[in-house]
Figure 1 (tube, rainbow, N blue to C red):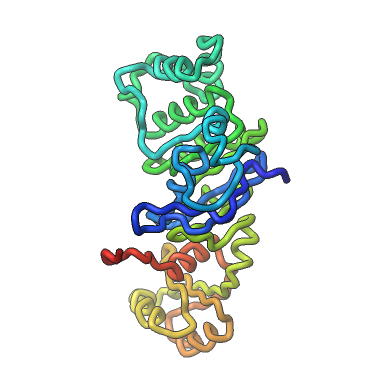
Figure 2: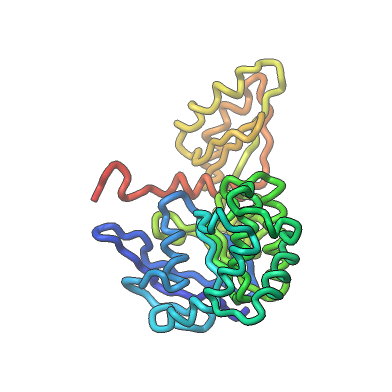
Length: 315
């Protein structure tokens, strides 16, 4: 697949702090790619380098076949970038905000273009509503409308559904898939595993370093996790709650996470994990079952392996 984004050795520093460290990543044209990682891992900085708002200190790359260093101005004209912060005029209506954006881009036939975009994203009935009166989900839909008004080839979305209710998130993602079906490439950072699983490919970055990249199935397989689900049989309500701390202290156990009324227990070494949990599998009141690891298991495992080099005030 022809890459819409291809970067190698991408590095960005702010003073003594290296925020993105030799990042190499590819996103195929027409893909929806998820960008995952804990807070402070360099996702936003990477997006800003890709769209020309920041210049890399090291590394090379192209975005839409344009050099991210030498052709940043041309890249900006062909992308839509949605930031985490809602940044439209709250005392203007939805339509007025979009008409303003159309003028900024110097787009022809602005009224027709705005009307078509309102229809496409289901905003036509709210065109006269003030932006400041919108709920979080409708604000995000307005922001997306502004991003696609100039018909970009690439969308960069920075945690677009943070703080949005599940129904609005689902509607937002339906819009994203419709845009991708028309040939638009999307790179979206998210903390929601259900959203990551809707992407064609994902990349996991932790404190500037890329740890995993590929389809969801490939990333899960490459983690090499063995996982078990532990449930209570109901005879002892405290059996499960008293299990977490002892398991986390065992060598060979890399993951212990509560999922509803069960625990997921996992490890990168199957033999070490089986040896660690063997004494606990005969504990009365507990039911153990080996399961396939989920993307959330892998996410938690990768987070546990990753340490913020600047935690605790280190320079």
